[in-house]
Length: 312
Length: 207
Image (cartoon, rainbow over all chains, first blue to last red; front, side, top):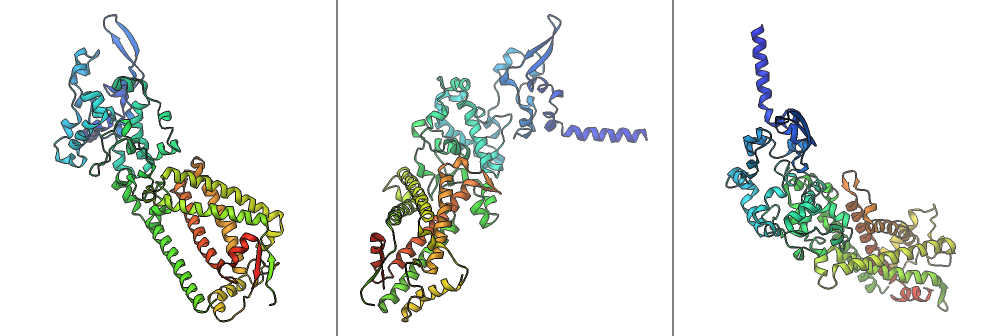
């Protein structure tokens, strides 16, 4: 009996340890790194003064463990990417100089990631203002946090959620004086002011992504990474507010969104989060209106014909 | 009939309103269609300009609608819009039959225009639907689209702004169809131009 219990207990222990990596962020208090790096402050024993110390954590090194458990890299542990020497504290100074893997080190040239087109994204990115301003120091992680990134545009069926997630990436620097200045060398322009020309600014910001106007749309890429200099940003309403809207090639082209619109015709018409202008954005209503208009004209023509014949 | 009989049917205030409203509505229809197919029209007048014209015309038509609405309350003109329960369906059907068949077969107009009856029953119903249902919907949705932040975010699972826009353009389309038929029916008079003259000088010619 005792033996059986031991076996059962071992199996249970083993099966929970299988999930340990993925679950470890949730148990931040017991994680060797996150017990400090998920908190505002950390404590350690100073062996020189032989005192317990409590210090503030550098705010840029505090990790959001909730977001990490939802992120695309959730199955990795810290030391899969960072040196295992971080296991000791104080961390050795030269660890700061360790070269970290770039996104392409793992994602490049791998057939399982081919659909994400990492190499083409890299090509496009090298043309962007971001690369021109900061060169190789402008890594993917400046926008796509390696710790918490979620492929929202590919998974969400809610346009507003996609927009919000995408715009927060831009705002994390463009609305942050220190981060912006680090890259550009000058103060960040006030976004509300420079977009003053845009009618219904707030609604635009909620319903379309910054990149809709600030990138060159490339049909074969999900998201163009060629962020344009501000002089080349789009300022023409009709580029989006037209039957042949640019948004169809960008924000609305995600399959996950299109799938949602396939649920039913009425749904297609009304569940559309887009507001481009008028009912002509819906092919059914457009067709119906043309038919009704033509029938009216035909009716009038027939009536006029009889009036002329009967001289009425 | 001896001499041409004339009735003063359209008082000055009504004609002024009608003129403003007509110009406003035509401007709104033209600019509205233009916005729906903006790429094509962008070559003639810029989209931004079209939007501005549509907004201004919308405000003018809204103000003129209130003028009409109040006019119909304070003057006797409002009585022409009252429907009586007798012959609720029979009367307009009779008028429709007259337009479709009777007028070509020597039938006299079943509801001739008089000082007591400015509109025939079919006309009355359509005017009520247009002026007291369609136009108010267009005005309300139009104001909402002018200040989109006041629109509720979601109607069930649908985007509030999108639903409002659909209502606005669908009602706008209905009003355009009304306008086409209105202009055509107006040509059925003593001569095709008689009724157009009447709405300018106020005198209706009985035939």
